[in-house]
Amino acid sequence: MERVCPICKETKDISEFRKNKYTKHGYDYKCKICKYNYNVEYVFKNRDIVLESIRYIINLIKILVIREVENGIRITQREIK
Ligand SMILES: [Zn+2]
Image 1: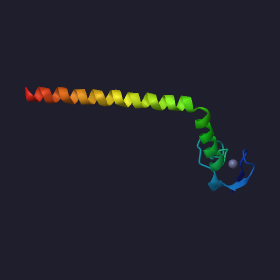
Image 2 (image 1 turned 90 degrees about the vertical axis):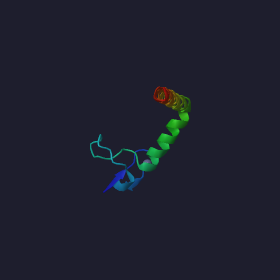
Image 3 (image 1 turned 135 degrees about the vertical axis):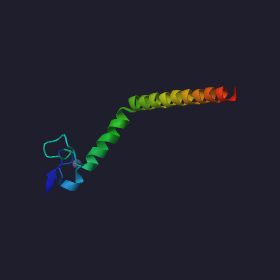
């Protein structure tokens, strides 16, 4: 089975397209290479937003780790007494 990628206009084997359960034919519209390029371009164009969300996640992890550590300290202090 072959499909034409609408981006690079190349006819490629269906194995060059990633499976996608949300499309009618069960495969992505873009071929794997075009999809990859699109993702890279997206990250590059939106690098401020991407960086900001990465920073947000790192901060969230930091808060959680600090909370865990503080809880741990509190538990050990209780055990000592
Ligand atoms: Zn393509």
